[in-house]
Image (tube, rainbow, N blue to C red):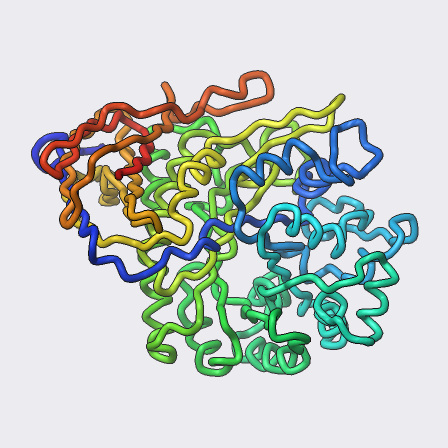
Length: 504
């Protein structure tokens, strides 16, 4: 049985301290993830230059433009579990000569390696984003990983630099982020943290910086969710040899029965948001362990896999993790981004899983005819939140009601505020209540705003989604129900909606 415990009925108050911000919201918090999984790469990002689907040098034109519009700051590749089965030399040189391999982790699909290092790094340049490479520790060698770094970043007269030039790229790419393994506790080798720590130290020794402008930001394979023991061992045994440590957490209650992406009860909806909100607790727990060894917070926590994970859509290929994406997923995205922004002193990057056609994707595509593309509700959350990138996080104080069910309680309102470089304030407000609007009174201490504008993302039903036949069911609209009076902002937030305001 569900109960609503509200403060002052369906009223909520928020106070924003507009002159007390200290921490910059790292733009890499809005990162994406592209794995060789299902149709994320092939048919999603890449169709090849000879495809009937409109493309730019093999990259899908529609997807490329959508990602440019999103201002993607960083893109992780090639995995995921695929990374520790991936041998980078299979994906360079003339495409007709590249060997094929079986994707053992994701459905046994045959991988033709037509999308490799050059294709990925060129894509990042086209998008204007930082590449994040996940290196193969599980089945690779130290020499293989060291040569990969040399191939990508060396400008000298070295064997791998010469090989890169032979493959058509004269100057090195700028590659900052490099992950030494992925999920070493699982698909990346089923290791113990003590063993992985020693492996990291060994691999790290041979990953050299080839120029002052492209020093590697080395990321260790961190914990799964609340596993603080793994983090403790790595912090103790690796320490400042790493600049970041990863964390993976998916909004899943039961791995055996994940449930449908679009067919769920109200109770399941609120349970999902409760599970989502546990990200806050997990980050606090992991940060506390990191603070013991790194009180100055020099080592970043990189949540490089997160998002919803539902059952695959009926009729799709098993192991390809293709799922629809509805307003519930958008709510998870907004709540999670609000949490990350609150912890921007420690959380330096996150990467939602994944960018196209896999799990909580930004974009869905097909390859029939000239190909369809549709933007998901999650895409629109990232689009609405673009203004938070590199803004200064502002402390807030919120009083609102909670939704409590089976002793699990979730605040009805989730919010985050930041000051942009031009002095304006961006404010996100999420009303998770399925039935009731929320009357909000927002005080902006230290500011004298003159205008407010914004957009809202909502729909008739919480399980509404966009598909190729109906691409605009869930889409942002202008929000005009906010009024300023004596430095107080009054507004009503409709049920199950996400509002982002710009206050000047």
